Amino acid sequence: MRIEIENQPYASIQADALVTYVFDKEDKLDGVLSEMDRGMDGHLAALAGSGELTGKALELVLVHFPQGFAAKRLLLVGAGKPGKFNASDLRKIAGAALRYLKTRGVKTVAFLAREGERGPAEAQAVVEGLIFADFESDTYRTEKKSNREIQSVALAGFDGGPGSILAGAVERAQIIAESQNFARELINEPSNRLTPRMLAARADAMAKEVGLSCEILDEKKISELKMGALLGVAQGSVEPPRVIVLRYTPSTHRAEAPVLGLVGKAVTFDTGGISIKPANNMEKMKYDMGGGATMLGVMRALAFLKPSVPIIAVIPATENMPGARAQKPGDVQVAMSGKTIEVINTDAEGRLILADGIFYARKLGCTHLIDAATLTGAIEVALANVNVGAFGTPREFLDNFLESAKAVGEKMWPMPIDDEYEEMIKSNIADIRNTGSGKGGGAITAAWFLKEFAEDTPWIHLDIASTCWVDEGRPWLAKGPTGVAIRSIIDFAMKM
Ligand code: BES
Ligand code: ZN
Ligand code: ZN
Image (tube, rainbow, N blue to C red; front, side):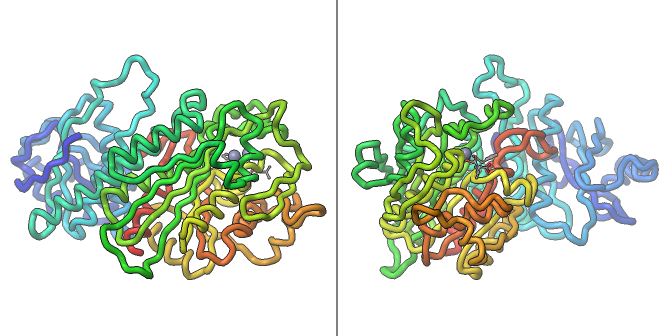
């Protein structure tokens, strides 16, 4: 999909469809809409009068052969109440428009920004929304719906000062949204086509393409490093584990600059192990590598965006299988840090592999940590599929991160991590156990388990178990992998 910047008035813009948006307010047809309405002999006013055009959020009204337009169609997208309208709404509006027009044989689109905020940040949101919405889960369809491709989108009505500022915003949006889609493609892969070794190969290929350094630790190296918690999970599978280490180093940086560590859970399939999961929905556990894919998407974007601090991604990758050699409930594993872990439930494997991932990231010199993981079913109980559960210490570090999430339109909610929860992961025979007390707070005790390995390093944990994948599409989002958290982490890294 080509993105162009257009400077013509609406009437002369050539396109299969021209898209703009309408607010839900008394005077719907102000500004450019009233101009359009005059050219259309009051046709828009009539639509508004009949109740067909209300401006309700994401309402879609398509007008064919609009009078006074060079474009063949006019698509009006509802923008909701003007009071709380922001760039995040524009992202969704652009996405919803693209997904609607795609199914109608439209090839060329123009997106017209209205009065109000329409600078580079808004242009960036629109382009992100377009590319993100264009994602299809069709890797394994033999008949692709290629007749549904939008070839170009022209951005009109944006003011970015000198043209290059707007062009820069468009380029940033392309990098970010394409990196999100890169991660979504990985998350979609079934486990027979994305084993830990194959994930490592994909990461390595991506790193070469964008100029990151990539080191893959194999099972031998993992044993030498004594990553006992990761090995405990991996021992049930014939597929060997891998640890993927990607590095971004800025061309110059202060000696005392922080080093950001990004740790992602990559269980390429989670059967539960000996504590096996029920068959119903088990196929979805191919997306249990979503946290790892998130960090790969972030690193891909950062390779282009070039933050000013060094970034190291550490992605432990394994299957969680039952098998003759699988770890068993009650087993004790020694993590790389030396802490001993009683494995009460082999299905709580994510925290085990992250324990070694987090500790290793600190060993490599990371001064600040973010982890992302499809960690617990309990986070769905707490927050449904609306918010990512965000944990972290110190609180100020988490609050800064939540500012980034808000700025890029990703919903995240701060979760508590009081000391009382730490009691719940004490073991009778080892230092800690890998499940809570069974009396609730499952997402929090899981976070506390990770904190045992992050210790005093400023750390953020994102439980994306309920938000990494959606079973039902939304107007701006295909069903399947969402790529959530990638934009927030990128934004945060760029501000460090
Ligand atoms: N991968 C799952 C968590 C999950 C559940 C992700 C649903 C996506 C959707 C994780 O490894 C797991 O099984 N967690 C257990 C932990 C429990 C045994 C303490 C859970 O949440 O049930
Ligand atoms: Zn599990
Ligand atoms: Zn899991």
